[in-house]
Length: 217
Length: 318
Ligand code: HEM
Image (tube, rainbow over all chains, first blue to last red; front, top):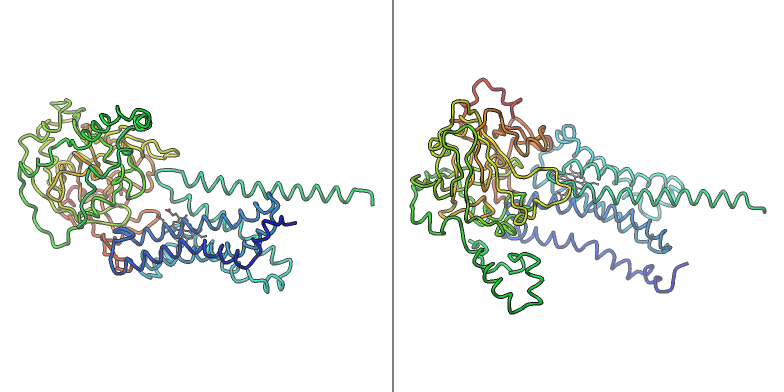
């Protein structure tokens, strides 16, 4: 199916390049942290904890939604090879969420686990974020080829959790908007489009199957 | 210490209206005059840079805490009229024309009227006040303000006996305030804040026209702002153009936008959490990534205001 020019996407170097691209924001932020340790305020301003939580959070949701977008694009533009990069994308989304959480736990809460538990029960936006993070863990673990084979059809079912995670992340984000709804509008629209594409695709499949079944054999 | 961005460093594309900027590409000859005019407007302040030096001021009483480096106090700001990022005010507030500046005094006062700022502060002695500033976002700074008690202005205009509250309003000028044009905004401009009259008359409540020994930079609320150190920072309204004495409690901006999050009183109170975070501790800026937060004190440590709230349930009236 793949058009010749796109076959590069399936190669090892392509995988490396994609991985490197996702790592760039992470490397830049880690470099900022490194500089901050020697020269406080130099890179992240006077309130670096807040900045780290926000930057990692922003990259988390971007890459999370990109993971869902990869499948849509591969279907819409008929580039099935693209799906091979979905796992890298998803694992990076998980990585950024873990760092987002770590920044919160360390820089904001000072590893005060009592406050964390209190936050979980008292603050719905934290609860939604934490559930999203917890649900991502089984997906990350079973993202390997081995697990995929072992779980067979259940793998697909399990990984449908990503839709719930995407919705939870959206609620988490939209609950903290203060003076504007900009992010709610942007990420909400993306989420709706991602769902619409899937529904349309599923309906088409059903029609195609029905046609195939009713066709004279 | 890093110097504040001087006027000269600002690219002309930022200070020249876009239409003028674009037409400049066509009419190069004509444009240099426009740029020069822009630069002139840029360098004028409501108060001459030397105002505070010329007037002199009584130095503030030292407190036992480190003053926040000026570069942080002038580069990490909330002034949503210029954008929601902490760096936006420092980037965009230079667009605000602060000269001429007048303040309208209205409502229940004996002497209403629109006064040039110079007249408001005429004959008033300037003093420095080194205050903790506690933001509702759980961070704080220590800032040396220069100003005078709110009471000294109120005494001049003479509130009538029916006056119970003071309502303050910030400038709204969309052409100079990019943040006010933001789409999907959930807060209304102009920004409005208010105090009970007895709060405004408390000797700790001041109007500031300067900080760090100089006139206020625009992003810090030039040329004339409120500083109420025992309340969350959003009460200390910036760039004030109107002061109104009212009988009823004024409707204030954040309280209107999210009443369950931001009360009218907004006294610093470690026991009343914001719905999304604890107010028990604060990050004293600049704070290293792994540094510990400090405990927040009731009334931000200004216990002398407690008598204002006797008999008031501060958990309900947060
Ligand atoms: C799938 C999981 C998650 C995603 C996609 C996500 C995404 C985001 C995003 C986009 C923001 C806004 C950043 C900004 O202001 O620019 C944010 C803020 C935040 N998130 Fe998350 N997050 C997730 C999980 C978590 C978890 C597990 C926690 C902590 C237990 C958490 C705590 C926070 C905090 C404290 C903020 C800042 C709130 C504020 O500034 O008021 N998040 N998150």
